[in-house]
Length: 99
Image (cartoon, rainbow, N blue to C red):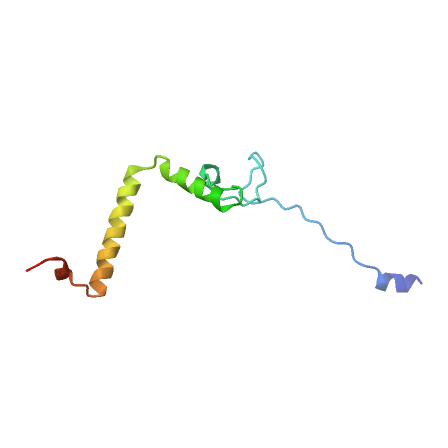
């Protein structure tokens, strides 16, 4: 039986001491947990279900004061894209002016 037990015996799994390269151990939380960077600033994260609650949270977000430069930049970008689109489809602006 001695020879048969050596052949049929399962091997013991190896264990490794894994240390991440850029983790010093002094940080907070789990270093392997992937969490988006701006979750703490999002108001729509982990909200309750329901169309009414989603609509109310969207309305509250629009009432909140934002970065004015960002709003102006977004309007300029949208206007430029609309003009490029109108140029591509060869839109004629003369229909708005009477001659």
